[in-house]
Length: 138
Image (tube, rainbow, N blue to C red; front, side):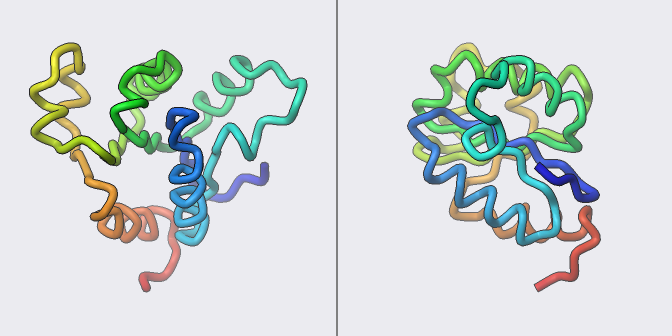
């Protein structure tokens, strides 16, 4: 994994891998470096150690929140690590609305207070990311 000016950790459930790969492609097109476990962790490497190492360097976390992701402990661990570091957390929603997430039991208040972006409205996030990455606007 080569590092550019801005490292974006993409958190997702295994069931959402295809969508996460599309998000990673768009993040890269914005001039940032996406980290996606399937693409960036080599076979045989300690998975948890690599995740912790990259999260300790990431500039922001994009989390793809789907009904499946809400049930995955790694997704919650990655959100918690990003929150603990104080880096931006961008929640992209697919299959769940902001209202459903905000009224769902067990969702931490710090996540409910974030800008929750429906995946179909990802362009606004990508425009802002281009600005943070120093990439020209489209």
